[in-house]
Image (cartoon, rainbow, N blue to C red; front, side, top):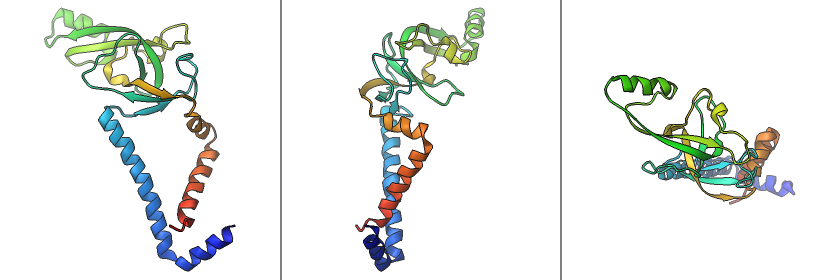
Length: 200
């Protein structure tokens, strides 16, 4: 099967090999540009995420692929499903907004300002209006305060996006590649090999 491909490869030579490598690199670069462009348009660092746990069942199951947006002027409401990341945590969390709270931090150094800042000191919010959120997984018994690493509320900067749509179970490919790194390397190696020995 591969003997014909190897004969063709030897006949075409090193220039053909370099051309195939460049084609493969351009496909990878195009995918990255599409990903970053989509993130820029939708105002989110990650426009697509995979559900990794069962904490949002029955709304979403492990392996569901979620599509996110994060419009800068849009407020979040109780019941919205958000994806957030706490600083220092690698994996984003998909949970529902349980409660929202609007606060205003004054620009002066009044007593009221110091009291508000003492309660919210860990958030390190600048002066101005802020929307704070408390989240909870639909399948969890308690809210997410224990997941916030010492914070009492989430601020807008912790939110990656709001869930706008999903495809069920499509993300299992990503989960399998993370659980079995050998599968990821085999898949990438196979794609690279196909790109190199392809005739066109």
